[in-house]
Length: 477
Ligand SMILES: [Zn+2]
Image 1: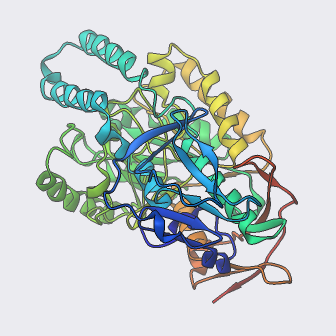
Image 2 (image 1 turned 180 degrees about the vertical axis):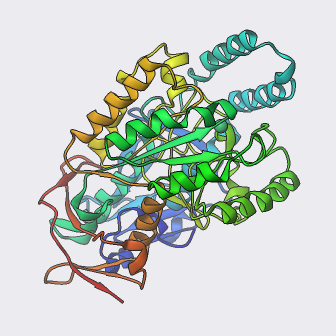
């Protein structure tokens, strides 16, 4: 990450980058970090708790000077944000870029002994699974889930720590700018408030047979989804893939064999990634989903997977073989790929583990909508075949359609948009704000960026959307 990557989330006017400096374990907004702050020994990274949110960071214990006062303090009394008396200059005693990346890349797991033990249990389970009868497998899975759901971080179903930190940073930037409100490039195009993406992972031959009823529902409601196939587990009939694409659906690659070994070693991962890329080229796929949502941040961001986007990270999900998540309900960059996190509970969690609590889909949708994020769902044609489950799915789609301001898009469209947004520049100056994108017209399609104005509320991190979205002056460089 370079100097001010934390600003890329908001896309404030570009000139504000000059207000912020990050480095040497400190992040300064509206000023330079005082020299006194340099630590001879880098403090250890730990999880700090603040009113239900968590920051995983190496926090410096230095007191920056008498003009500074503590503004945000953890429950253990660790100061996480200092400000001057006027609250126009701010010091985070840690590297905010690193703190954000450590949450996205799940580096907090490295410090968590319990999650280490769970990972080991899970690896061992995959090795013996094929000899374990199905009912015993389900019993083991439920027991394992009970342990996982007790992990205090990331919280489930709502994990808001990352958003809390991003809002706190935005709040300090607005205050430090000396302006009452700042424009930022809205998260979604055309003034939309919520983005919804539907995906399906076809696990087995049985799943292939059950594609039709789900496709029928989606066609009836005039929505489209992406379908992820496992190239070397069952016969991936090219005609089925082509038909889906012809009907406006998207086809992605779901691992290679789905045997739980993709990340067993770096050599296996790289060897399989080459084959996976070949299938992607053959199928015209732009998206990848890892089997069982297995993931390894450093390998995946290395560029070995040649896809426009990945969608293997839950924001938070204790019920998957690999518990945890990236804590984000917005897309983010995983190396060259746009990561589209899975932010709604999976169908088998809702139906099989929690006994049919579909209300959870609606509740999580409300939560994501409030934050203006990405609601991304996986429904498996292997499990969601019984009429009652299909009815629940259809009712949920109708519920989504009843909401105003929804951008229902295919995952590759969302990835393109997120890339364009990242490559756009917002200039505000004195007149209307203007957005310039760099030569990517074809990716942007008919979608146009809008601008949202944010004001800093009285409490640290409290943001107020102070005006309706405005059409910026829009041009291509
Ligand atoms: Zn799968």
